Image (cartoon, rainbow, N blue to C red; front, side, top):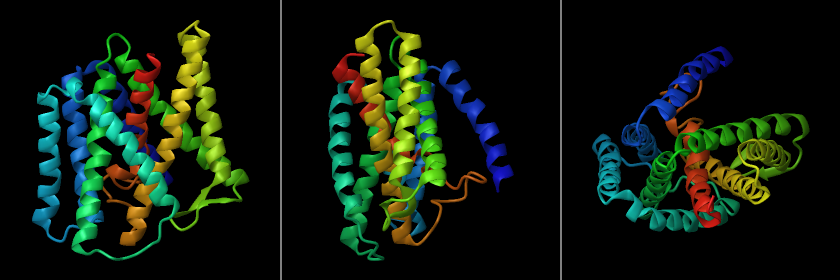
Length: 272
């Protein structure tokens, strides 16, 4: 399993970095839409939508909304999408903190979870596209956000393995601990501080970057917990098996879906 994970990572990481730096924003938007389309198909199975047709129509409808947002143009809608995302993730924090595992999948529950999928995917796609499209430093900021989340995940994993004692959300994700959270926040905060000091001579700018980064990492934990809740309610370990050794697309982007809108909104508010 570890060998498979490493091989998959060795293939994906250069593709991701190359795409960020060498593709124009329009192409990045298309690639992200395709990736998140697969994630939406996985979400449809987690809801669960009952038929294959419904599982295919669900991502198709949301991708149509993505296309309409792109045609709007996107920058006219981005503030609305980011604020909607922030409100949703605050609600999600409340939900996962009081979650109960249930196998109930009535029509009302399926509608609710289907709407949640829209709130998870559309703002995240829009945030990543707008982040990449920033003048001069867009690709750098996009890579920074991805590395930030990777470091937070790794820091949480190793700190949790070494010192983990107090469960974070035992009903939703029994393996996660508060010590892991501290490790993730500490490692990502240090990374943001180093990048800020190297990138800017301004104390205000560096402090702002660290603050925005820490907020994004904290919300990324909620994104991870939300998908864990969805999977536990379906009684499955991975959202799919599309990526060898890593599970599904949602398993790779769950943290990012929450972090990206919060990160971009923080950049806007602090004028970074």
